[in-house]
Image (cartoon, rainbow, N blue to C red; front, side):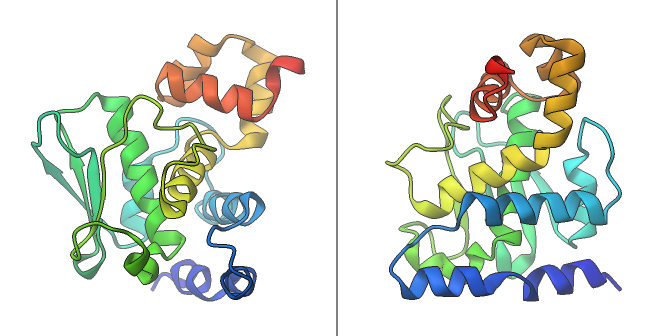
Amino acid sequence: MYPFTDRLNKVGYLEYEIALQLGRLSMSIGFIKQKATSLISELDLVSPPVDVRSIAESLLLKIVEVHLGNGSDGALIPERREIEVNVDKPHVRQRFTIAHEIGHWVLRHRDRMYEIDEAPTGIYDNRDDSEVDLEEKSRPPTEREANRFAAELLMPAEWMKKSWRELNDPDKLAELYDVSREAMWNRIVDLRLLKA
């Protein structure tokens, strides 16, 4: 019914398996970018903002809205194919959380849950305002990978380069892509657009 989902789960994991055998516990940036880019391409997405709820639906993941106050931002519950999202958080934070949890799913972190010192029934996230500091070494590799995936999904590099040339304004870009100012600034720095 959803051939992309099946293909996504089978293709490209040789690099990951080799990395694990070599003792490298995180996926490469290129691998993560390729997974996000493939998803965008397969779903025929062509312009911002990316509809993360539709993407979750296309992957047969159900989004469950929960009220957690200032608690966890969200969680992936793999055995129920659910993404819990804290609706008490700002809209742009919810979008990033959903993209982040999709990243856990697409990158098969559910198969690596033994590496995460969290509840055994899910991958729980409680990011602070540095949520998209893609290189923050204090976070587990799976969390850095999911953050990278979320940034690649919500703010694809090629779209960002074009948008930067047209608008050259981080606030307008954040509004266009429906992300936080912090997420946008981190992405601009990550892509080295200030030099462009």
